[in-house]
Length: 356
Image (tube, rainbow, N blue to C red; front, side, top):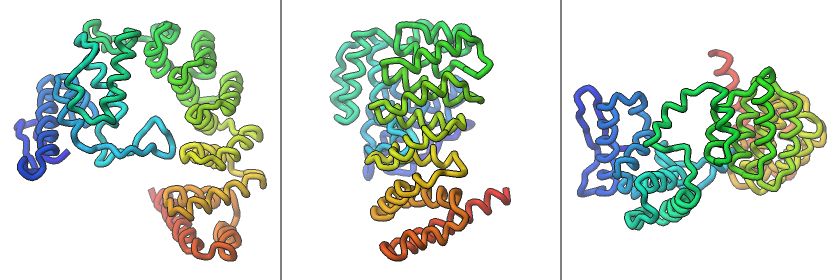
């Protein structure tokens, strides 16, 4: 956000003019004033813009922030649950919409006319979330009950939270549940149960918890393998991420990863590539699909993906330069130079990492 705030002097310095950029300047004033409020309350994370934005919504000053075009409606290739923001970071549209809904819900509002003042792209999901909260009365966030203290509870308490009928309780419980291969049988059983959930949000969080395990567990890996056949692209991709993190990518998983490379969804392609990149020696069946996906990225000048594929080829083949030459020079010579530039950049990154 434009401008600066000095916590010691409590001075706000603006770098924009109200007359020139009224919306952005008003949002900047709100941001820095709310940060000052957090500082006075000795809030540890007052310097993080996401927390400042949440607080702004909570005190009723979120509307000016919503007017600033902070979010570009484009899912990041690695995860559709995240969004590309410009400028960074601040809350994305999904988070801001839900924050507005929570703010209205805790005040007992079933419909909020002030939501008419926010952009439609935020207003619609906020209204939908408020309708859900009003109907289900289901949220772990409940200020009047002092829920902040519950975040410090032990694993037994989180286990009880995961077992609740409340969807939000299950989700927050899974985020704090620490499951290892040596965990209490109850914890492992709870995780396995949620890996079979019919609720996509619960299931996604269960997959994340499984992927955070330090060591793979056979039963958990089996459930993650089953999820590779799920119809939901997010769930399939997250399951592949988790298996890669657990170093559990075997021949069967590789077959699914190859299929993912043929997807039209970038984050699914990325999941497949991540899974394959976790294996040092890939079978020959990988190359045709990887080549096609790589050439597609060259055709649309997707330099981020070009770099990812080149790094993968560098890992898989003994002579990546010769491999790319054979792949591109005859049929697609116009792309060969781009591929070589990406290969040079990948090698330079390795040198930099080695120097560190």
